[in-house]
Length: 355
Ligand code: PMP
Image 1 (tube, rainbow, N blue to C red):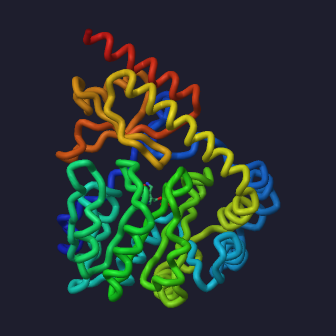
Image 2: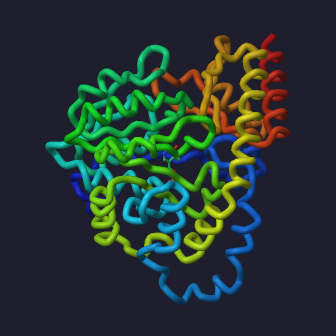
């Protein structure tokens, strides 16, 4: 840190992304990417001709992308915001809707970036602990009286909230924005998109990084009432109007056209998740029922961090968090069936070593 860093930022602890090591080939189950490639249509769309046009700025309004998303989700283009990954949208939402007086409520165990954004923007955070069983304390969100962000399904637990609970939180906080982060919704949870008509304070945030196999392209979108979307546009046009590059816009449009390909892959991932859950339970792991493309598991006899390190030395990357309540758990992304087979066999070997 230099002596020039603003005093406002001196105590900021940045988000730590999952490792992307290059030292050897790993089975990569640590950042919830899809194990399946983008659809053939996406690969074809990002062709040489498009690369040859990179001398020109992309469309800042992202018209085609917005129209396609609007049609796909049954809303108008004015209800769609697109950005360079959903992290950007969450960041913009903190900037747009929070200030020193009006903060953000979120769970103690959830996506780590919410806390980073709250710190970054000097926004008061109301941290609502998950209940003992790791479910969201809906009653406390319903009475918080401030902006809310809830990941549904939650990360890293994978537990999904029913829509009636989401609706209750939105109705109880009419003077605040209720953000539903649906990064993992396509793997078995219910989307709140249908609740938008009656709940104009709700903003749904989605990503192309998981079920649409495009983490490397950086594309996220939000759906909400036109005035909320206009607020996000205000921030975008005050920071970086060209935040979605030409190739990503084209890839995104092609991805929306190949939804059936992605639905099939999501079904495969769900099937592999259920199989992996069964296998891990047979090995003695406690595995939380997941509606996401990862599972959250701990073994009563093995330390979480040690298990993470041992797997890493065997060439398998999973995610370990140091938080007090979750440090015995591993978050394991659902990969290809063959990768999960190797994971389970390796875990079996490690557990047997200890007798
Ligand atoms: N929300 C949640 C809950 C996530 O886990 C992630 C990815 N780690 C994101 C948002 C951000 O995804 P992206 O920026 O790739 O769209």
